[in-house]
Image (cartoon, rainbow, N blue to C red; front, side, top):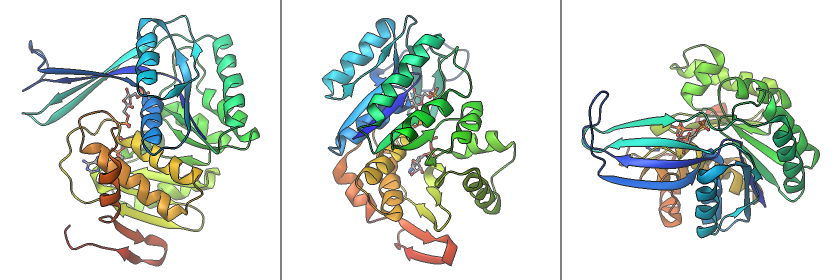
Length: 321
Ligand SMILES: Nc1ncnc2c1ncn2[C@@H]1O[C@H](COP(=O)(O)OP(=O)(O)O)[C@@H](O)[C@H]1O
Ligand SMILES: O=P(O)(O)OC[C@H]1O[C@](O)(COP(=O)(O)O)[C@@H](O)[C@@H]1O
């Protein structure tokens, strides 16, 4: 089983707005609303692969009710801690004409110490039955920056592998509990180190630093350029084929989901890295946040460029890039 933890759940609203920009009045052409926040996107993709998944986290208010009902309608099992505050809305404004994407992320509700303790208890129970626990996204207000560290310790004690996908101080503090895997994107990694990671050498050094902190798998995701995946023994770069990107919100979540599925199936590191990249790339091509079409994933798996960086070898390269 895979448990996905979303501390700051959300209604992910997508607005399609032509020629959007700051300071004007715009008519929205199309509105879509989904249960969201990173971990719920992970759960959606895991479910598409037919793996058993339970989504947990904090949920509250009218928005919380919408989130729970949407998940139930999608057939995703939820086991949440209910809080007195209101779950947030995250807006993704897609301008199909101007080809821009703008995200507005609300901070989320205030969560009390007692509510935090209840989530720890729940994770203890769920991690006992899970091979993998994913922990994704920002922390809700009121929680200490080391909140993920405590959750990771609880999951580790129950024998689960933890994938941590967060940013800023929550990532810095979370690393201290040595999660099995971390997956910052380039921006998040630069914010963590305070350095530019534009150069390949800087990216390699960053992954080495992550491994030195004690994580087993360090991933740096690079948008359309793919991802670098490093352990103490292995180091791969996976580059996806060029695709027409429609909505890249949720790509990182799809990457985490693909990796979690492979880990739960006991696949090799290389298979996990390829599956994660293919799932994330497929997600970029659909309008829904973190949507996943298995047939497309299977097709993309055969079109990835794979480099073994530790031996300077190209394992698979197709002629179409
Ligand atoms: N425009 C794109 N084209 C193809 N694949 C993409 C694109 N954007 C993202 N991806 C895929 O999604 C993964 C995660 O994307 P990235 O932007 O690095 O993370 P995040 O969504 O967390 O910001 C990438 O490693 C890649 O596989
Ligand atoms: O918890 P955070 O960091 O505020 O992020 C929330 C938002 O991230 C998203 O999951 C997208 O994340 P990715 O594009 O990194 O996968 C949105 O769906 C969501 O509302």
